[in-house]
Image (tube, rainbow, N blue to C red; front, side):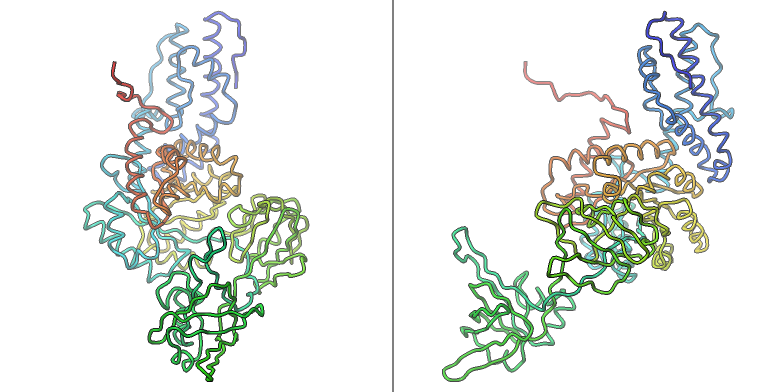
Length: 631
């Protein structure tokens, strides 16, 4: 592309040079779209002009045009910095102005109606139309939609779903990585009922789980529970430790519903339940003293403070480790009642990893032992396909980026990594934690067998399906073919960009997505930040926004939006700034939390306010009264 580089020239020569440079730029756009004519021909008829504009934008960004932008701005012309939705129209408008400045004959302006380029107005209209088609009509007072991730409780808590709809939820998100079809059906039924009751539309989007890489299980630890009293700064007990004794049957039920028999017998959150024989339990009375030699050999005393039918509560002022088989004694005069504690849940094990440590990943999912002698730890990794693709030097991130590593040796049966990033005191790694391999080209399709099974339910019940961990065009084409076979080619598709490969292949993914009538993109900032680095996240999310605007494809801004507010009831200042930035997307997603309704309210308010100031990259200059102080 030609560029004007001479700083000392008269106005006529300068304008002529700019005409040459912008003409070359325009020709490059046209050549690029002609070269990709086959891609344009294959997209949905409603998306062909959008596909052409996307290709024009890719051609525009092939070269560094910053010097040209400065020269255009110095002539009082558009610098092409806001041309995403209408690239050729922007270039042609600048070229026309330059010809006028050069004194050339007026050029006839082409319009869409005579087969020319996409106009400014049409570019904006297409993005609006595609957003409405995917996400439904805009709510009153704002154009940015709100998507809310539903908790499992939404299946049985209709009032929660209704209040979310009342406060501004435009789309309910159901994550197929959790719960089951029966639960999903109840959640969706509550969403449909709430939408009808409040008189505003609310779509349902369902996320396919995808091939999430995770660590395998670790061998269970000892079967023991710790009772630890709360103390003040001087070591005085301010709240004794407590446990509930219950019969084996009661405890088994509690363990099945609460995980490890906690919080279901009695009235205290976090109070463990210890199984004991029924005869021993029935003999306990309030005021009894229970003597025990705990798992460390320490002699401890527990006070029975309350009894109920089938259970008894005991407290202690000393840290006590009760283990399976611990012998309990109660003395009443010369009579001694004795019993052994029943089976307790095993303590979840973890590996403490520090910078410089080595860790071996293996394809086996047998529970890996936790070394007690400081030796090299091993842990499983799923799916096993990754072991043939990983190479020495590749980066590895564990637990959503909390632990970083680099591969030092790789083979089909095991991969050794050296820890390169962890907190100063080390970080514990447990089973079931995420694994990211940003440098590895994984031979794993985005659709798993589970996803294909879940897709039948999604096709029958949802308005939108989200494809997780999409990396290649083939991943999307497979989903599209399955939807056609299920009779749902009309369902909306959201491409979740959460890997480096997905980001790098986004232009191809957009062109493939435009073969469907309704397509969107989600910026899944959590995994994307881990894969690409937190230092690059701001840059990447900007580039995704620009590219999708060029394709007239709506964007969902996701991950940790108002996360602190949803969890604690109070937002951080950084979260409010993030929400203000999110207005440039067509939809913003909230995750679940006890204060999620408050998060929806605040998000709707901030989005409505920001839309008066900003539209995509364009600052809107409404009348300001902020500075009208007293004289």
